[in-house]
Amino acid sequence: MNMKELVENFIKQLEEAIEIGENANLTSCDKEISNIVITGLGGSGIGGRIVAQLIEEQCKVPVVINNTYDIPSFVGSNSLVIASSFSGNTEETLMALEQAIERKAEIAIITSGGKILDLAKQRGYNHIVLPQGDSPRAMLTYSLTQQFYLLANYGIINTNFKNEIEQSILLLTESLEKIKQEAKEVAGKLFGKTPVLYSEAKYEGVTIRFRQQLNENSKVLCWHHALPEMNHNELVGWAGGKDEYAVVMFRNEDDFYRTKKRMDITKEVIEKYTDTFIEVHSKGSSRIQRSLYLILFGDWVSVYLSELREVDSKEVNIISHLKGELAKI
Image 1 (spheres, helix red, strand yellow):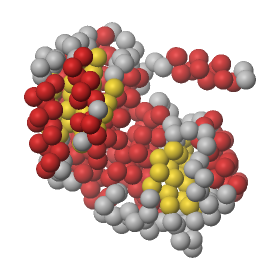
Image 2 (cartoon, helix red, strand yellow):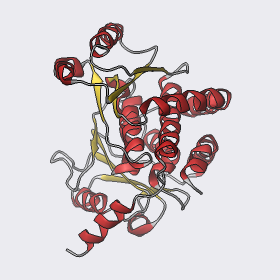
Image 3 (cartoon, one colour):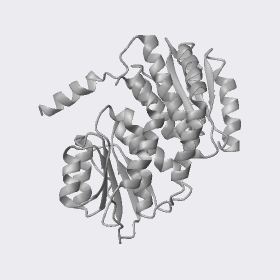
């Protein structure tokens, strides 16, 4: 499948992801979990960041997202470490996992195969196997959903997420043509410009996902920031702004009321320095629904922009080159 076909499968993947989670053979744990580390890179890692923000209101222990070789020094026998690697061979995740094992942490794994799956089977770790196939970034729905199932298995969250994902499927199905139409319009406005992405802090994971999709699918440089922090530094930098920058601001009905006002004022300031400021309003009655709406929207923007730029949205040869060079060391 090409990337456009994979994005077309987003909703179907959500349905399949629920089925995978329901059929996962997971065991309970008698440890009292005091902290959680979700370790993973790129398309395999972003699901954990998004889920960590989505569970903030009910999770009673700290959740740390790890995107490197080493794990935090606090990880120990009462830590839950979730390792997510679609290929199962991501070197950073493998090294982080080895450290977690040495520190006797509770281990859970999300993967489609590779060394990590072999390790999970050999040691009897809780694990959920994803379908093998395409690019990790195109499999986000699978890995993101399994994060919920693992956290529920350990009693960290309740199982309400299942209904929320099912409601998201209905919402996305009903909204799909509107999403695609708006995404195509936004891609046209981003064409030939450098995208700058903003959202409220609790939706930053979704914004990072959008940035990553523009990087890999559209082959463009861009950056993101979150409010209110952005108002304390980057807003001043817009004095050097110019029309080559195009802003996309994600807005949600549950954005904090003071941050909503900040967004309004921020828009007024930035519009003095660029002629492209786009506001995208999510749909949905919950944070899970709104997040999945924006994720699918961003995926479609990245594909449409790749078509305008006449680049292959699926190709990531430079990453393969990097891994090849590292393998020589």
